[in-house]
Length: 108
Image (cartoon, rainbow, N blue to C red; front, side, top):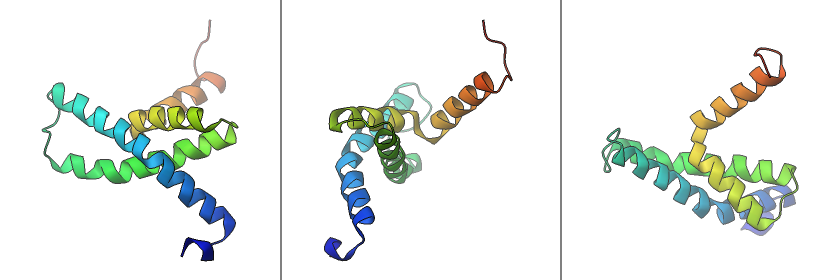
C-alpha cells in the first residue's frame, strides 16, 4: 500500500514511524516528571494527549533534523529533545530566539 504513495510521502511516513518511538519515550518521560512533581495523576486524560503530541514532535523534530542535515543518530537526539519540550516548550524556545534576534531584548 505504501508503494502507491508519492516518494515524498513514503519517505516522510517511514521517517515518522522510525522516529515515533523516540518521541513517545520522551513524552512519556515528561509525563512521568509531571506526575512526580504532583502536577498530574499518572492515569489521567492528559496521558491520552501524549500520543498525538509525540507524533507531532516526531514530525517536527525529524523535519528539523533533515533541514539541518543530521545523520540518523542525531535525528533521534533531535526528536528526543523536541519530544521532551513538546509544543509549549518549542513555542517558548522560538519566542526567545525571535526576541533575542529581533532586537526586542538587551544582549550583553
